[in-house]
Length: 449
Image (tube, rainbow, N blue to C red; front, side, top):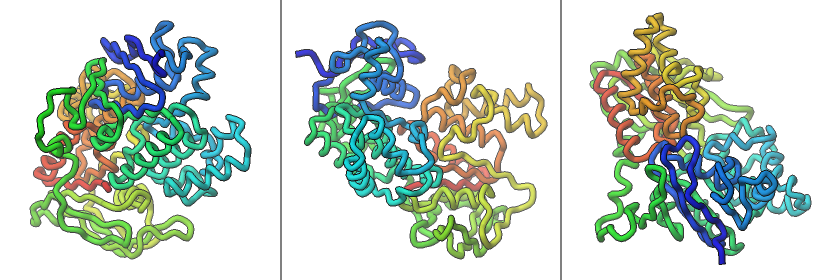
C-alpha cells in the first residue's frame, strides 16, 4: 500500500541544495525540527499545498498531487494548516467569527459549528468569543488559530511552531490534547517545532538540515548514536538563571537576572503610580518600579497577562491612564516587537538595519558599515542581507529586528519575547549579547513566561 503522504526528492525554493524525501502513514504523528533558516516553514507550506512543487510526483497526499491546480483545491479540504505567524490566517476582526470561518466554508452545519466552537474555546482557554482579534495577545492568537483549524476536522494537520508563544506547561497540555484527539480520529499530524518535548511526544522525529531530512531519537541525535546520558543537555540554554522577583501585579512580575553596577543607577528609568487598562480590564494597577542601567530584567507572567502591554508602556508606545514615567533626557530606547515584521521599514535586511543610523544623520557609507558590523555581531548570514526581511524565517527575522534596534545605539533595549523562533545556538548568542550590553552600562528589559 502506498504511503498516505509521500515526498520524493523535493527541491524546495529558497533552500539551496534541498532534496527532501519522507513517507508518512495514515494516523502517524511526525515531528520535524531544525535550526533557524533551514527551511522548516517552507517545507510546511509544501505539505499544506500552499507552495507548488517544481514538477509532478514530488509530493503525493493521499494520492493527490499539489503540482495539479485541480488537486490543490482538494488538498486544501484534506489538510489543515497552522501558520507560524497566526495573524497570517486572520480573516475577520471578531474572534468567534474568525474561528468559525473555515468550518463554515466546508459546509459544516451551524449547530455543529457552535458546539465545536464552545468545545475548542474551552480546550484552548479562549474566553473572548465576541472580542476583537486585534485585542488578543500573541499566545491567544496562536490558540485561536489552532482552534480554527481543529474546527474543520481535517484528516491531516500541518502545524508550524504552533506553541512558540505558550508557556512550556500550557504547550505540553495543548500538545497532549491535539495528539489524543488525533489518535481517536485517526488524524495524521506533522508538527514543526524547536521544542524538545514535542520531538519526544511524536511517533517519529526528524531534523531538517542542509536541505535533507534525518531521523533523530528522543535526545535530538541521529538514530542509533545516542548513549544513556542525561537528555536535559539537549535543552541547555533554554532559560536564564532565575533571580529575585519584584511584584508588578497579581499576574505580572519582574525579575532582575543580571545585576548591574548600582553606581550607574542615575541612568535608569522609573515608573511612578502607573495605571493602564483596556475598557473595564485593568492590567497595571498603581505600578511603581525602577530599572537600573547595567542590569537586565525579565517581565514574567502567564500568556495574556499583559506582559507586552507593560513593555510598551515602559517604551512609551502606550500612554498610561494615570501616573508618570521618568527617563533621563536624551536617553534612547530600542524596541523589538513580539512579531518582528511589525518593526521592519525597508525592503532589504541591510537597508532596514541602516535605517536607524541614516535617521541619525550618518552618511550612507557610514550607515552601511555600521549595519554590516551589527548584522555580523548578531549573527545574520551575509547571504540574507539583500533579501526582504519579510521573506525570512521567524528566527532570522528575530535576529534582524534585534540588529535594527541595536543600530540605534539605545540606552535601553526592550525585547518582546527575545527567543521567539530561535534555535538554542541563537538563543545562547542573544544571551551573550544581553550580558555584553549590560556590561557596557545599558539596561535590557525582556518579556518571558
